[in-house]
Length: 116
Image 1 (cartoon, one colour):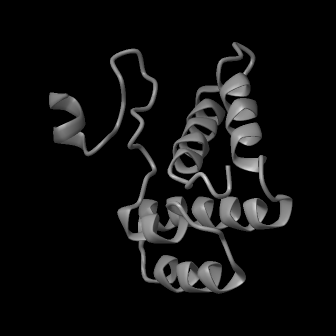
Image 2 (cartoon, rainbow, N blue to C red):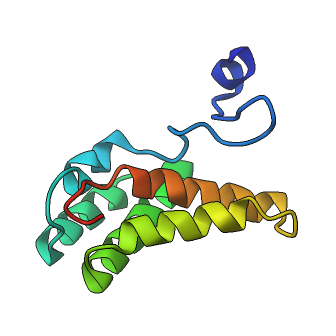
Image 3 (cartoon, rainbow, N blue to C red):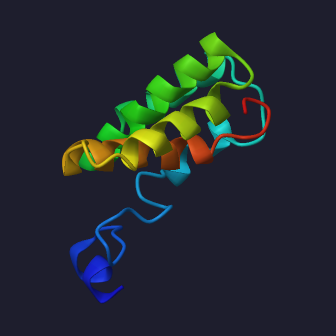
């Protein structure tokens, strides 16, 4: 906990990611408990446009997930979370890829039940 506070990271003791890694409160209203629409995605794009650095990168992951959830419909979030979890647990995956899979999983976990 000390190291995370000091370094601004979200790592577990074994090097994994905490559930809040990659989660942006600024984008929560767009994905929590409601149906996604093109208008919501456009509004979220405006918010992401105002972010910088790592937060912007995470915002882009939100936008990508929102677009896919809208296009693929109900069931996408749960299916994709399971797929990402499986890939992240593989020993054949590099540390950087594992981190990316876990970030994407954490972001999808914030999506409301309407898109799950």
